Length: 291
Picture 1: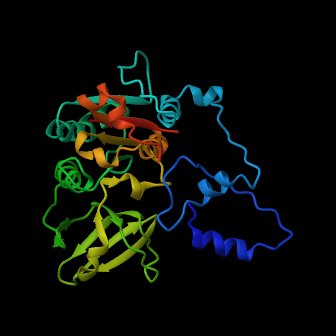
Picture 2: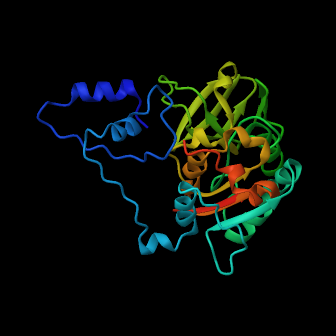
């Protein structure tokens, strides 16, 4: 999403006789920077606006798309077991501890066996929050141990362990290395004697000194905010009561279509019974929900 400063710079650069077509989704999260440019421009009533709302036949076959539109309208997704092959699955969990176990089981066993997906490269866990037992930080520890335990060649820095084949995310822009906030890569080597770690990002090798590893974190699980604009073959989404402060409609609407093929949602029993507990406000894959 474009913030006020970037939109100001854009409008300053556009010639006066040019036409500007703005395309966006007003129902998604606002920009990280100041302002809600698209929402405010629409609300002003000063420019023509066209809103696309029809779900066409091909997209209507996808429960990911159907449920995303339902969430946007404040309608609880259909969490019943699908009678036929589906791209949207609900996995019940009565408490956070059960949710963690179900998510690990999904990632380690059920999704790879049923859908032939690589749990590290093809599946992304997306969490409403970083904190808590079902937050991204705790789940990264659990998933790293379950999917990719460290061998002899490893380094421990800044509260994390890094080893070959680990999935990592850059959390700061580094213009010298040409890796940017939110970029996901994979560790290819750890050299304790040289004090260096190498990782590959989008086919390009990047070297880090051990003292620079505070810019990397494990990326088996990430927050929904960090993933904004990204797509994955499959996503697993925990929605539990300890995430309540973040469970607003636009957050769940944002994450719903992040999956290209499958979406798995793990939802706590309380939230699955009470749509109002989830939709506190309105602020092409498979998606799995776990709660």
